Image 1 (cartoon, rainbow, N blue to C red):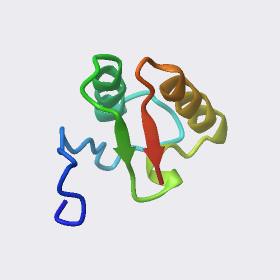
Image 2: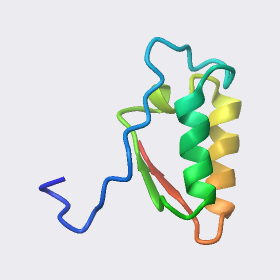
Image 3: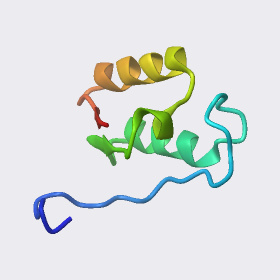
Length: 77
């Protein structure tokens, strides 16, 4: 955060030990999406695409859904 002083961390969303191949049991991911819908988040920063979703169709779908929100939510991989 020191490199981006204008950024505010909302939360860390981590589904420890849960496969990213399905959204089933990914409670933290679902919570993050709800926070985006609630206007709490405008940018998701993730270590890699694989940490966001392992299923490419889910990944593309969620990135598009987030981009279509008002205001849009960006994803930085």
